[in-house]
Image (cartoon, rainbow, N blue to C red; front, top):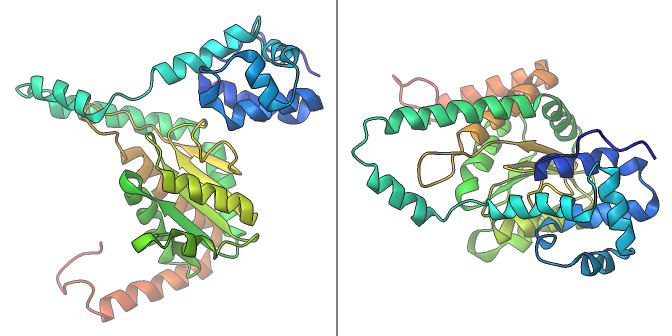
Length: 298
């Protein structure tokens, strides 16, 4: 087992990323403890070390050794990272909206909003250079790509589906209309891939999609606001986007930018065949009257 890092991770995302990166180097007992922390991060602030150890099937001392392996002086130091992360969760929308109403006379609202979006894009770009290539490889190698996102995450999922479908036919949007989500999920196969978009607060439906994908043996690409998100913990690849906003609602701008970057990489990777299919789709849209004669592309 390699020596502990000089400085332990200070954020939950960094801690979980370290567990993933070092997982293969851990002993079987430490892997059991690490796996439980990855799968059940929300339990760590709430349960005792003994209870967590029992649920993970290990001795409490194993969790102490795992914490020390990561550079902490003990379990409580590691646990505080989980506590701080969940204590600092997103404020309710109504609470954020009240602040906006109080500041409604400010002429800097647009400026501060755009500044937040700029930071989101910078952070998202810095976090995804390597994972983006990995995600593109997973999707390009899949027999069929299924795309899921619900409620406020739906625009991200739909945007990816719409763009990718322009040059690949085997891309399907998981809709779940009229309570038919289970019917959509029956189509998942081991050689398929599932793209899932979600950010806090996470929807029940997206968790069901993640569970179905794992049961079917499909590859999973998660687009989310955290590597600790329910859809990210057992994903084959996670792309993280920042949702910080000066408004009452989380921002999806960086998520949409991430989708555009992923589709761009897929098109470049597929090359001439994708260009031919894209040209045919574009011509068909114009022939069918989808666009006004004088309108531009959109």
